[in-house]
Image 1 (tube, one colour):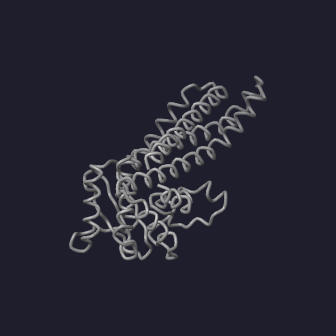
Image 2 (spheres, one colour):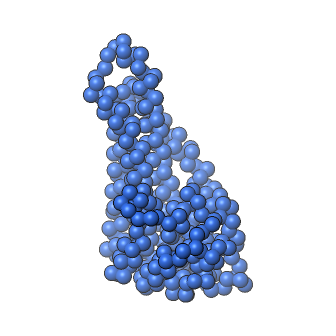
Image 3 (tube, one colour):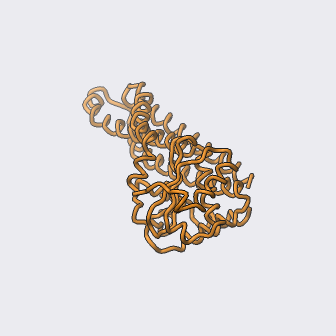
Length: 291
C-alpha cells in the first residue's frame, strides 16, 4: 500500500512538472513569434479567473446536475455510520452525505476542501454492495477529500486552460502578424515550430490532464485500502460496479470524471484508454489484489 501511494504521488507531481515545462516552452515560443513577453502571465490570470467559480461552486453545481438529495440517518443509517467511522479514521470532518435515486451503482466526492466536502452515492450502490464493499468505496472517496484532489485537479485545469489560451493566441498571431512578416521577413524555422506547437500543445495538455486524473484514481484506491485495511473490499466493489450494465442516467461528460468508475462506460482500446479520465478497472483491481 505504501509503495503504491508513494509511486502515485511522485508520478502525479512529475506530470505537473511536465505541464509547467510545456507552459513555459509555449510561452517562450509565443514571445519569440509575437514579441509579446507578457503572454504567459496574462494567460495564467485568465485561466485562474475562469476556474475560480468552478472551484468554489462545483459541489452545488454537480449535486444539482445529478439530482442528488441529502441522506438522512433514518433512511440510510448504514451509509451515515460508514462515512462517520471512516471520517474518524482519516482524521477528517464528516462530509455532507447525498444520494442519487438511480439503480446503477456508483459514487463520487466533491468539495473544495475537507471542511466543504460532499460524498454522494447512488441508491443502486447501497442495494448491490455489502457493507465491506461499501466501506471500500467510501474509503476511496474519503481519500480524494483528504488529498485535496478537487483543488489539485483545479490547478491542473488552470494549467490546461493556460495552454489552450496561449495556443489560440499563437494561432491568431499568424493572421495578425502576416503582413508584418511579409514586410520584414521572418525565420521560417521559428514559424514552423510555432505553428506545430500551437496545434499540438492543446492535445498534449489534454493528455497530461487525463493522465493526472488517472494517477489520482490509483492514489485514492491505494489510500482508501490503507484507510479500511482491506483492499479486497474495494476490489470486489469495483468488480461489481464494472459488471453492472445499467446506465447512470444522472451522469454526463461534465461530471463523469468525478465518479469512482466511469459511468459513460469506456469501450477499451488504446485510444479510449489514452483519453479516459479513469484507469482500466482490471488494472485497478489487480493492483488492489496485490496489496
